[in-house]
Image (cartoon, rainbow, N blue to C red; front, top):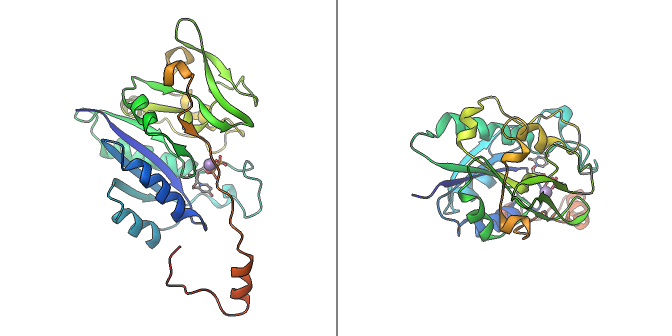
Amino acid sequence: NIPTIYAITPTHTRHVQKAELVRLTNTFLHVKNFHWILVEDSEYRTPLVTNFLAQSGLRYTHLNTATPKNYKMKENDPHWLKPRGVEQRNLALDWLRENIDIATNSGVVYFADDDNTYSLQLFEEMRFTEKVSVWPVGITGGLKFERPIVGEDGKVKGWYAAWRPQRPFAMDMAGFALNLNLLKKYPNARFDITAKRGYLESSFLTQLVTLNELEPRAELCTKVLVWHTRTEKPKWKEEDAMIAKGQPSDPRVEV
Ligand code: UDP
Ligand code: MN
């Protein structure tokens, strides 16, 4: 009985959302014992996501919570200005605490943003995690990759990162997974929406583990199995022009 992977994905409505969800689904369908927790950044669960999940073939939980207005990204904000997906991840953590009995279920929790690219191997690397496992993340932080620095003794000593490598856990959200039982052990552990830029991962992980306890994966952090890809915002100029003319495209066609 292999541990279940609970993947937590914050998601928000935008032109590329459905395409992103299709890409993720096509990956996740290949992963054994997988449970997707998709959390919409919205006041309600949208029909698009509801219908999408129902036909996905995945085991899933569909949640929603809207990011408080003062923290919400605006259309033209630079992408790093505000924290993203924070309250959605926290809601999913609470859902797991309330709904999954750790006495009868072994599991690992992973934060899988909707725009990244995940190899199948990644999920098997994280599957057996005692506390928190870590690995490199490709194309992130302005570098080819960021990764934990692993010493001769196989322990994490610090971080290979260009931006503030002195952060307690200087890695991307996609660079670690945790044992489900830590959520019960630390019932108040959560992401801090007020954390300084780049400190979101640290705000959570400092409540759960120490550097010395981290479990390096992906051949002692020498392999990249996940990529921090970002999807280009599509051009919508002609669509907007048609809307302005009172001739929008057929609204019955879901994209
Ligand atoms: N996200 C969200 N609400 C927002 C912006 C982003 O729920 O207002 C989600 C997004 O769908 C993704 C995660 O939060 O799963 C991280 O966002 P993004 O990929 O834009 O951040 P970046 O990769 O730039 O750190
Ligand atoms: Mn992203």
